[in-house]
Image 1 (cartoon, rainbow, N blue to C red):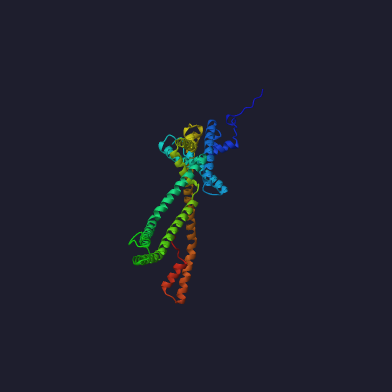
Image 2 (image 1 turned 90 degrees about the vertical axis):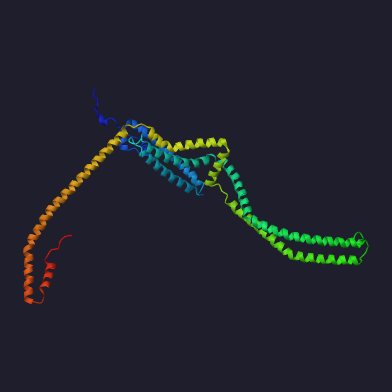
Length: 399
């Protein structure tokens, strides 16, 4: 009977699915290393599922949050996806930083927990607003009524001094008119009583005393008419000023009413007031906060609780090996550069020596020719000749 002999290194031909590779990517596992780690495959797939759950929850929560502050549904979805990817990047960075070396250290874990708690607490708000949506809208209507009452009291307090002064002026004028009218009424009653014999002298008819009282009544009545004519425009002005203040208050209240909305902050305040005044809602609120925060903490908790396996050891050894190889490569590269520089120095030195040796006779010949021309022409100083030779024949030092 024939049997197929197979080496141990070729027996495990495990091929992960696309979804499994995606979960490994979410859990920041290196596929080249974890492929051969039988036990850690499932561990990191579990961590990847936790990261995916947090990612989806963050996307939905942020999408709902943006839907409360902008009117475009498409823009809210796009911004929600963007923030979900941002949270995904933060979560991957958090779990990538948890290694076997620092998993038991308090400071790194505490920092990651604080960051995750902060993000989770904020992400819990949109979810709670969605869950308590009906109750929150009832609370918003109550809160808005309280805001309107407070605004009305604020306006009344703002214009109270002006209204009091105008009302005091109106009362003073009205009192003056009332007093004057009482004098006219008393004079009229005295005149009537004098003419019908029910008062005064007791004589019936329009006698001298009655005529005197009639004249006094007519004078008082004319004075009242004159005073009323003078005071009435003042009363009209005061009434117009009071009406203007009332119209201003109504316009400000209408403008304030248009600002009433159900935005994110308004809903958050309504949620706060709802749980403050409702014990049942308060208990469920804090219970949901804990659950939703735990959703954000799932990747960190999963990575911290799962034990270290062969993958972590491979990562540690692989990193050590890469550091050693990198250090060795850098040392080799440095030595090659030194060798290159040494060889270049030797060959360049030899080349320069040959160059100067070959140019020795030509330079001397050129010098002799210049001296001969200078002797024959005798049209320049020796210093000029020297300067010309320095420029054309002598070498210049390298900087």
